[in-house]
Length: 181
Image (cartoon, rainbow, N blue to C red):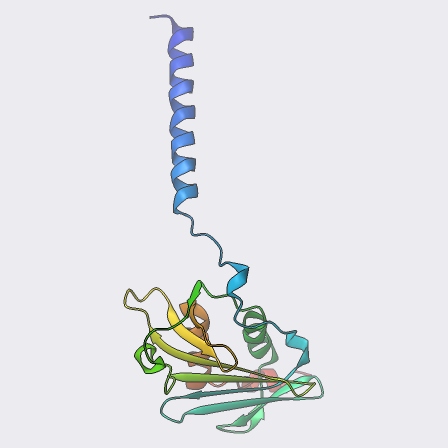
């Protein structure tokens, strides 16, 4: 067999294999959340308070004093600005994977009473409230609803896990960071 022909066949087969792999990878990549499934939208710089409370009454309250965050409850201390601001940035542009008008009572989704409530206070007095419910049957999302809307959202588990973590590990500033000038 001609060496040139063999080389052309090998290169063609390689190019086809790469094309197939790229096509399969593109098909497996999940589509980004549809912006029409916007749950919350606010400027994180305008937030002055953050309150999270779980179904058992465990609660974290964080307030902004001047430009610094301060944990008020469960134990008063300086707050970790980076931790709080990163969380608020994600909440400020929260998109759901999907949404639907519920046919069942909200209790069927863990929303009445909610497993977690997130209350965000803005400098102009507006409050954004999110009720967080149970995980979906396939555990790929978590049910959520705002106080002002009738639809139920399928929230990304990551943001819900972050909110739950904030209750279990309040965003206190580490002692070593407090001593830094």
